[in-house]
Image (cartoon, rainbow, N blue to C red; front, side, top):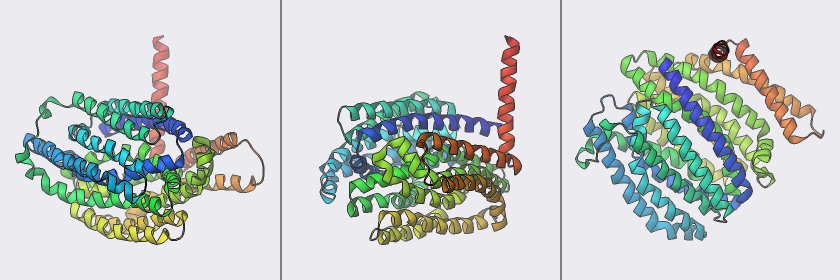
Length: 488
């Protein structure tokens, strides 16, 4: 458990520092690029994101979860990554003009040309990066991601200042991937410093085919709105929606990915060593995850408009109501966020695919219908999608790890009470201060303080396990300070 906590510290440190850098660069870019320019890049990013799953073909997840990882399996994984990535690069480069013509935007062709290069470079890095995660080398990952984020931020802002417009984001993405590839190669273990062997692809293919199909549908489901909004409402509206979604996704960037990066190999290890322990680990993970996720999304639901105004400026303020709707939907999603990793850890890839195949058409149809009304209805579609996903995941987990409804409720109910009080306080402040004039930044800061203090008080009153971890960190800091003082 200590190794997991140390890994979480490195993982969270990497995420928080990188998020601070990304946030600062985003605040600058929001004032240099228009919603339309951001929208053009977002469309291209959505298109390539769907193809990225085929590019990786489940290789990263295979390398993390495989119980007995031999050199043959690793060389086969490398070979499969190259076999998938390079043809995709050629495909998107060939079709770039057709895609640009469909959306009547020449800039789409320019961005795709640059993105095709990322598919050439990434196969050199992604398997090695997965091996770093498998071996829980999060200190090295911290260094890699920090340099990668710095390069992206510096490149994008510099090129935006030089009037590269939406291309500044595309070139920055390529530059960061090149740096990541170099750094991952430096940190790669000597025992896995191997050349691709195409004869060993069959060792990885079965897992990759099932997993990538599932992930492709999931990613397509999460990005289909980009294609529909840009076509139905234009790139300006897509830019606003992307900004709103980006605000909500700050939590996934900061917390979720850091947690999953550690818990995914941990779940797999727990299942291999003691399958009966996995239920307890999962319930505890839900308890910790929701006590962080729900307060964040509850606060964003109330304050999205103010957050966007302060961070990104007045030209983005119309994204506020969209962000509020999306944040409210994520309250549902948070309960089952870790469920797909349990299915992967236990080898139930087909169940994950079945769930995805069930949810995807419902989500797409919902967005298509909502697009005939307005962009707010599109945002609300997520609530329906995640509600169905929650029911399906819990059904399958009840069969696999004996997760009962009572187990689930007991896991997240403390988080509900902990979130309810801070949410009610800030909502009351907004209600009674309506019509009064305050400095928006100072008033927003005060509400952040009120919400945070109420959250901490509720964690202690409910005796949530996180309270003990917070106390342990404080005591450790005091001990180190006293020890440092005594040595002086």
